[in-house]
Structure formats: C-alpha cells, structure tokens
Length: 426
Ligand code: IPM
Ligand code: MG
Image (cartoon, rainbow, N blue to C red):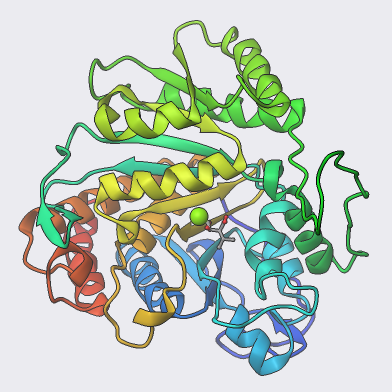
C-alpha cells in the first residue's frame, strides 16, 4: 500500500498543523499503521469556508472507518485574508501545496472589493496561481444529474432533464487560452517570480482606449488535455443515449486559429484511441445541444474560457452550482474545488449546498487511489458517490437551492452518516 514519506520538518510541531502569518508549519508525523495522506485545505472566502467544513467531515468519516488517514492542514487564504493581512496566503503556502501535500481542497476565492494593486483578483495566486504554477492542465468537471434533484427555473422547482440522461465529464483546458496572461501573472506571484506582461500589440482600425487579452493555444497544452479526455472515456460507461464511448471536441474552429490548432491536435490524438468515438461541434451550437440532448455526451474537451462558460450552463442540468464539483488535475498534482464561487450574499448563514464540495472530495480520493494504485480508495470514492445519491433520493434534507430548508451542516452530516454505514461494511 502506498505510504508517503514522513515529513522532514526538522522541528517538533504542535499536534495539529497550522499556518501563521509568514510561514506554514507542518503537522505531527502520522500514526503508525495508517495509510497516510496529507491534504491541504484552503477554505478561502465566503461560503468556501462553510463548505470546506463539510469536505473535511467526509475525510474524517473515511478516516474513522478505514485504514486511510488524512492529515488535514488548513491554510487561510483569499480576498478577505488579503484585506485583513495584506497577503493572499502566508509565505510558503504555495510551496507547501506543491512539496508537502498529496492533494489539495479549495473552498472558493472572491471577496467583494478585494483587488490587488494591479487590478487582479485578490486570491488569484491561490486558485489561478496553483492552476498554472502546479501545471494543472485539465479542469475536470463532471456533469451528472442525480435522482431526486429538481431544476430551478422561473423560480419554481421542476424536473426538466431526466436522471440517467445527464452524465458526462467535461475537460476544460486550464493553463492557457484567454486566461493565459492572468494565469501566468498569478503563478509568478505564487512562485515569487517577476510578473509577466504580454507584449504590446497594435490593432489597426480601432480607436480610443484598447484592452486586450491574448488567447494562445499550444499543441502541447491541447494534446495532454485531449489525451486525458480519451483516457477518462476508457474508464466510463459511454454516453447515456447509446452507451457509446465518445469524446466531443468543442471549439470555434470556423473562426479562430487557436481553435483550428485545437481541433487538428484532437484529431491526431483520436487516432491512437480507435475504439473510442469522436464528435466535433462549435461552442455556440454546443450550448443548444448541451441543453437539448445532453444524453449524447460522454466526455467533452474544450479550451479554457469556453469550458468556464459551458460548465456553468452544465451545472444547471445538474441542479445548480451547488451540485458542480471539479478537479484541477496535472501529471503530479491536483486540487479539487466546487465550481461555485464564494457567494458573498449567502456567506455566514450556513445555507449553501455542500454537495459540490463533497463530490470534489470524492474526485480527490478517486484521483489519489488511481495515482497510487490504491484500489480501496477508488472504491471509497464510489461509496461517497453512492452516499450522495442515496441522500438525494431520500429527499428529506435538501438545501434551499434544491427546494429544501436544510442547512449546509445538516446535509454534510446526513451524507457522512450514510457513508459511515457503507464504510463499516467494506
Ligand atoms: C471557475 C471560476 C474561476 C474561473 C474564477 C473564480 C477566476 O469561474 O473556476 O470556473 O474563471 O476559472
Ligand atoms: Mg467559472
């Protein structure tokens, strides 16, 4: 069984790991006989702090019933932290996530009015800095509708899409495209490098003040994303409509050069996966098909900004942003986060849906298990999915976004209790 090396901190830290302004302190060594995983928990801003508690509850539950131990190291960060301390996160936090953590959970980043002197989002070093600085090139966003989840439209709860007919995995490119300059700047800050500025360009025919963001797309960035898409397709059961394993390339190659390259690389990679079907679509048309025939989609790959936009629409099919989980995944590192933001207007009320975060932990354990060849962790991840499904099917403890009155804590405890039962039968 996989064991991580004992931390070589050279000092005797207190029982629980902590972060103080200016420096991250590592936790105590793991207990003997445990399969140990060190998880960095970045609660961030607003409701991110509330859902992080439920994510941690799931890890605690797994630890209580199995031989998988999790040392959870909480790192304050984000826009509010920046306003209070002048730092997006304590010095050493990025290094800790890169060098000491086996996996990372992030709640949400974004605090009203929290901007860096250069105008960038305060907290960007955390979310965007890790995406680029840890080379997490694929943002993996499953879109799955569970039984018992209604759709909120026109202020009413109705069933628009059918459970079983919405089950796809979207891969959003995560290190380049329209986000490239901002990602690069954020990683530069996280790594203490000099900040990147894109070269000046001229735009003939335009007048007045001009702002622009370059949208570079590389063959390497596309190839590794598409390859992961095909690899994920091999592990899934195919599209709900016909059971066919299929990867869809969604782009705007009728218009942009970057997308032409993206599609060409996709077609090249597809040749090495002859048993998996392919499909092509333009992003604008995809917005229609995603809502009208979601059952056709199995795995979808898109460039960065298209993936950002498409997955918020995809979340509607799942029952809303409170249901949308994600993993920012590279070859060596990964961080897992709910797709929703910090939702400042709901913060402090213990009312938001923690399922996106609980399912992000599910993705984390699946990733850790596959990476380290720990089949039991992969199994545990699937039990978290079963527990979420059972909780939703029972339908008696739902948060406001799904038409209920339960609190974030209620839902977290309910799912943890179901999971405890399943784990004790392992
Ligand atoms: C997301 C979010 C982020 C993004 C924001 C918070 C920078 O919308 O993860 O989808 O644009 O990538
Ligand atoms: Mg987004």
